[in-house]
Image (cartoon, rainbow, N blue to C red; front, side, top):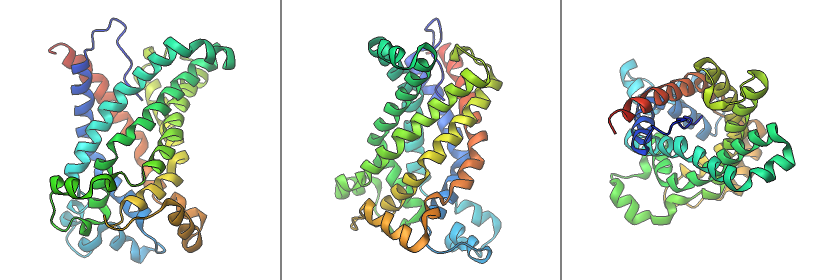
Length: 299
């Protein structure tokens, strides 16, 4: 969900950046461990059982004290912070921007094709899809975050600057799969949210939705988005968590996954993701909505 523009335009660009960025940091600190669990489950190629679950999730810390186990779920926090803050700032401000462009230049096309009501929802969904595709520019930070979470050996003591200098375009591996995942995923996120508000909650002006209505619409949109994007997200994750020097093709990942693990493996890690969808979106959305007007008083 993107924070809607203030009707009187009082929310400045700086306030949007500060508000959405702060919400991204807070969201990261709370939900990064769950994301690590999901990534490690998606990257695991063996069968998961009660006896193997702990080693898969906690790796070398599986037999260590509880506090050590918990801290082991925070690898790559620096990369994750850069990625999450940039992503939230981009997503919170990008979708309304794309929606404004579509409204200005293509509204009649959407209205003529889908009708007034459905056209409005389709514009929201299309704007979300375009925003999702554009997130590919943040792929290097996402790739570094995932490698730290599931394959820290790939770093071999190198810092982020050295990695960028030595690896270059290899950090964009899986960019096609990322775009293929983000396009339908973001379409489903904003589209399902709009449909829920329009048809279930009876909200015609989305910017005037109450906190409770945004809560329900956010859950519907996020569950739809994550479920739709799950198969491609699994492929993308396995491409990105390989060693830098090893080039892994998406088609190869798909073939091996189906052959060795079966089609259901495309949805590994889906449960922990869905379990965190509700509180995660409500938290980040509510915090951004509260902080952006607050920062607008000062910047």
